[in-house]
Length: 451
Ligand code: ADP
Ligand code: MG
Image (cartoon, rainbow, N blue to C red; front, side, top):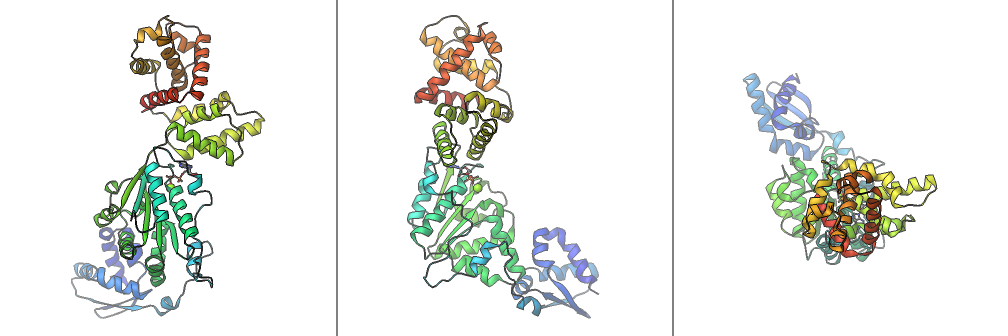
């Protein structure tokens, strides 16, 4: 007899989408069918009410369209479900702390899930992340006042999560009695779903709307297109915002670019400050490498750090990964970290990343334009400094960016000897390590050639 229900669900599933179906319809079961009365059992009161308010009519219509008969639906709450105070699962630190909130000292439990390493004092500031880092500091100093909400967005591996954790640490250290809640948007969704399914919605609501002084959510774009979760986030947002509590989120794109995100959420995310993080410039990358080398006790000379930072450009996580890889290999082989060694370990990986290879001609053209010299002069024999410096730079960049051999590059510079190219590369490499102005010039040329 439960066929009516199953057939109705089958008919509805494509229309409602699988998330809704899984979340709100599948947990219901048929208790009985008396004539034209379908009696369903819901695992919780919340689920019962949600079904009545949102899906009952749709189900009745579906039944009518299939059977041409009018039914009624009644719901009862599964008594087992109501009593079932689901114990937090062992690997669920969030739920565990939620149930151990109060301690006699009046201190809140430390926020769960924050990495020890991600603090303000380990975050290197530079032009690319200055706004985001300053806004994060302001939020940590005056939560709920300056920028609320604060949204930090940017590409992968640029330090968004790092800043979010840093705010969490600082808030907790300055106000140990406040409850700081940090989690990923995915986790927020999963906790919400299980709270609903296991009839723990009251705890969920308390944790995120009432017992929460600052909410830090990582990768908020994750909830886009997930209707119930967006709806719940909307309510959480409103409750906290109205109470003057700080909300900070990160995302991999701007609110406007979050496809499937409800307008009422994107507009709220824009209420406070939206700050971007861009890929760090060379100087910042070098500073990040130095710091990482220091904490990991990796011996890397400054000029080699600069060289490594030119190879890995767009992503701090990869930059750190590259350093660790180089250090590991150096350790295994028992050699020092030198530029050729870095090239050997990383050269190919760095080259493979490029979509279209850079040509020697492209390098010559860019360098000639930058220094306002003629390409013919770069290839020619003239030796005065106004020409020879740009020529050496062009050779150096050609070697770095095209992967061509020294003799090949010599050939393309008007048939020069490979030793001339090698000398040019050594000279510029040494100058780059010392002279910030040259470094900037090279960096600009690289960016131009690689983009
Ligand atoms: P995202 O969340 O933007 O993808 P993460 O915050 O996870 O990136 O950062 C990736 C790695 O790079 C982390 O180890 C982080 O500590 C490091 N990192 C990123 N930016 C910086 C920075 N400015 N200073 C120090 N470390 C950084
Ligand atoms: Mg992140």
